[in-house]
Image 1 (cartoon, helix red, strand yellow):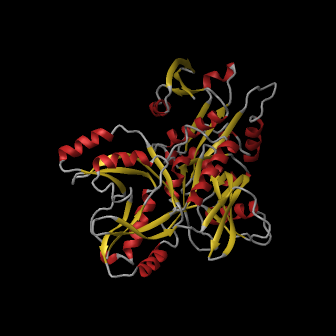
Image 2 (tube, rainbow, N blue to C red; image 1 turned 180 degrees about the vertical axis):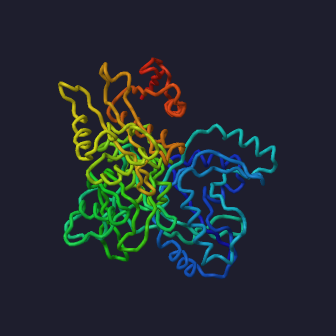
Image 3 (tube, rainbow, N blue to C red; image 1 turned 90 degrees about the horizontal axis):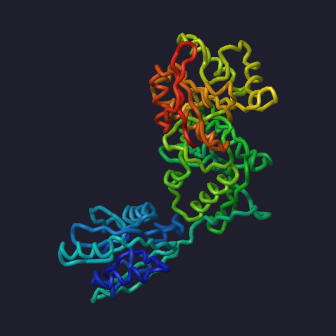
Length: 494
């Protein structure tokens, strides 16, 4: 008995695919548009046995989103409609099916999921067909909720013998947890001030952080405790998002999801519950789904809602958020005293007379007095009618302080020469590109303050600082002499 395992997607605009296939695909009248998961195999296995194997292989697969867009050609004269979203899930299903229950039928050929829309007789005919469709800018979107087994008839007609629904384990609700439904997990999607999301890395996989509520904790208390225990991250501004309803063979419970902002990141440490040290990485919001790679619709719906809520609540829609930037701005506090003094002393040991971008840290013998100073200048007064924010930059991977940066929210006449932003990098970390990364975080912060422009001042002889400003689209607007040295002003439009 010759059978194959397929997905038959249903699209609202499927008539466009049908019209193309009627022109170019000899099988258009025999089989509906489809994505092949297991290629035709001849087996005496009964349909009941086959369905049992499908149930086993698909037990963790829920409904998923599918988008196709664009066309491509194969070397053997096939015309394909390409998959834009859902490809990784389909590849995972294909690999799972062939890994155990159907491995005897495995064909050792590259697997590229697609919908075939043409089989042409020659390369010339294929090129003509491709010319017909290549400029068709139409997307085909659906949710795949079932997998089908097709029996191939003696005239190559398609006979559907099994349709296996993908019920999934999870359902997403953006609403309060119903009374009486137990909550077994509280996890969070957490964001840096410049709009990136922190993920932890365990055995090569990217994950959200969270855990089980303990001793009558609130959801917020659970999330904050778990982030400290697992990845040594302090959270602030925590908000409830919704819950995933889990149906585990009839046993139903909730997994709560929250959003929060990152307050600080400490040195990586051992999670007391697992004995592991997890990696940490900040990723831009448009990369979160790629890194987490959820296979179910519910998980991806949750991420969409988390990002949407965070953009509204935290004003995170920022063009200066950057994938690969491993720094995070944090506010100096009593908790950062020891490492701040170490940072300061490293400058003195290297022969530096001041700590650039720190608001005068080098000139304060008393750290607490310096904290009071930078707290005071954060607020405008009649005597000093501007606000100034001071930050350390911390490396996410190991928690080390890398630099310091000071941002004037506006400029008075006596501050114009120094510009809006002053920054420095600790001596041991210079020459590694951190100046540019730190400046981009400062620009992201300035953007959140609704500043339209920032001015950066540097010595003309300091080629590295000038290059950093230029790398962030800084334009030289002024040169002037101060204390016998030529200074430059670079303007950056936000």
